[in-house]
Amino acid sequence: MHKDTDLLAKVLDQVPVTIVVTTLEGQIIYSNLFSEGTFSAVKGKVEGDSIIDFMNELNAQPSFAELFDFMHDGELDNTTIILEPALGSKLVYNLNSFVIDGNASAGEQFIAIIFRDVTTETQINEQIEKKNLEMAKINSELIRSNAELKKLSEMKSNFLSIASHELKTPLTSIKGYSDIIIDNMKEKIDSGVYRMIESINRAADRLHRVVNNILDVTRIEQKRLKLKPEFIDLEAVAKDCIDDLSQFTLKRNVTFTCKCQEGMSEFYGDKMRMQQVFTNLFSNALKYSPDGSRVEVSIFSETVERIHIVVKDFGIGVDKSEQKNIFDSFYEVGNANRHSTDAAKFMGGGTGLGLSIVKGIVERHGGRIWIESEGIRENAFPGSEFHIVLPRHSEISWDDDETKTLVVERERHDEFNEQDAASSDINEKPTILFIDNDREAVEIARMVLENAFEILVAETGEDGLTLAFQHQPSVILMDSYLPGIDGYRVCRLLRTQDETRDTPIAFFSAGTQNAEIQKCFASGADDFIVKPFSGRELVDKIWRLLMKKKEEETFK
Image (cartoon, rainbow, N blue to C red; front, side):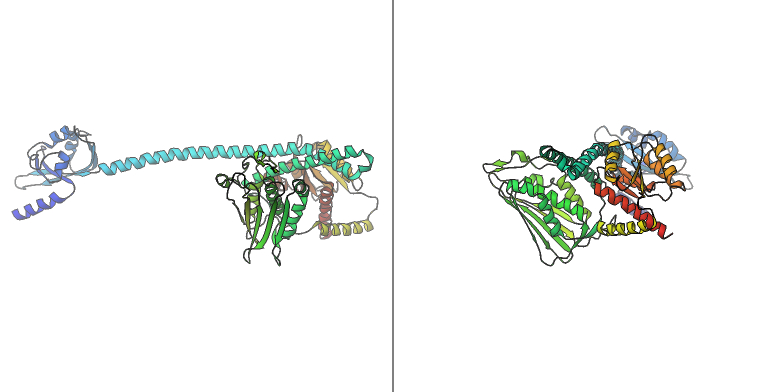
């Protein structure tokens, strides 16, 4: 039996926890080898001494004397105790104890105490908890920052909506009146005045493009850029854009060439948006090219399913440090005004939106764009290459699938007119009700439409409802921004009444944010006409609405 006891003691000496056995009074009668580290004493010297005294010397927290009282009553389970020796660092132990019986005839009892060092584990847990608190604080900051960014984004969208409306409202008058003078009054005014009117008209177009560019950037950022796909000839689109820039290329003596691989099938995409892509890239190449240089445009099949477009110029190039930012919104590469040589002067200035819009349109078509340039070298023209790769048939879903052309619609419009003339008074004109307090825009529209339509005008939502119910017009055009009842509510009210439930309604507004347009259609509108407008567009839209109504009545 004695041999068994010695064997057990040797085993306990190897256990990596401190094991102490005391009398009920606290006198140590056994401690294993591992306890040496706990008590900072050589094994054997602690035996016979008081466990409570040792713990007091080690500044045990909580009081070991109080804990020892609990040990008398039974097991003490998973209690944390902290030891802070005078020399050395703080130690944390997990404490367990239980009562064991000794000599039964003598009624002996002892207390076995197990100390497990959890210092490292505690430190790790404290570090994790500290990190968790830091992460919670960071997360809280991120939530607050996200809320602020969301608020700023909403404020930006609201500002752009209001700004575009306020800018486009006077543009409607400038563009509308100048269009009328150019189209109908050339012979009635002095040639010098006529040239001034043309300049005003071009300036209005430029301002309109700037406003639309800002709105396009917002749509791209919000992933709400809508596309109208059709099969298009990219070579023809590119050459048309080159022709549009001819007055600038001739002035700078910059030659554009466009090479397209033979036998290429048509590309399925948004024609107007691809015109934006080419125009912005060509304008950018022209801006940073010296007089008398050239720009090469190549369009070819990279694979059966992918089209590759390259726009290569021989200008000043793009610095390596700027190439990563070149497609960011409002980022203007270098300062073109400062780039000059003895033989060349560069066009400068811009909003810094062109390339960001190009990137947004290309990616919206499922493609990608990048730049290749050796960088800027002194007294040299390394040039730049812009590469675009597009899927021939985009794999993304389209927002709008409007494949009917105005030619087809005009044929139907003529057919509609012939049928209508056979069944009605030839002098009877359709009635259009304008609900709009923008007097200039309404007056321009009246001048465009009055030969073919009867015109009614209301400047408030309330007056518009009254005229609509009294006259039951053929078409209603209204602005969303109205004094009193706004246009959205007016539209909803018109849709609830028998007299106007089926009347074609189009919003006639300068507010072109996607959210506003969606709100217009959600209120019951059939179409949306953007200010400033062209006379041709306005007439086409109105006849389209009339034809739609005629078809619906036919199939009822």
